[in-house]
Image (cartoon, rainbow, N blue to C red; front, side, top):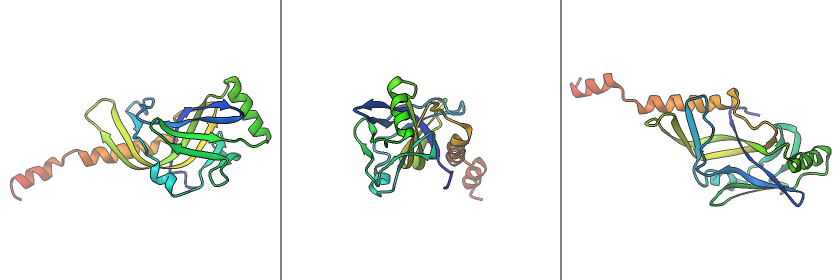
Length: 183
């Protein structure tokens, strides 16, 4: 699988032996990433991704051996509303599924992560720290984890995106002078 995607975190709860929650709350500022920027997801950022019908998987700890559900089997339901990207998972009657329900029910696992690939984004370099707004993204997976965190390898993609956007937003002074002098 192509690992060129990013991971972020959100929250989860148990309702009648189903796991429900919002994977991505809209316009909610992330933790400070790399000490350089915050990130928010614009409303309905996954609209195109969900419309494709691609198979999104629910995992335990980002491990495909810990498969908990998938959209193609309808054991994972994803939808967008005015609050964010919502999920409903009917976990399997497996050791992993039963353990997950128990751990979430006890509060040992209260967070989630999600893997995505940003397809459209904007950067605001006028504020400090900067602000990245993801306006469209491909959802690859959601995962239940005891340690929902931003790891360096996961956010490196966002950092490269920030550097490229910043280069494109900064004027080329030499080119501006040449244009001014009509060279």
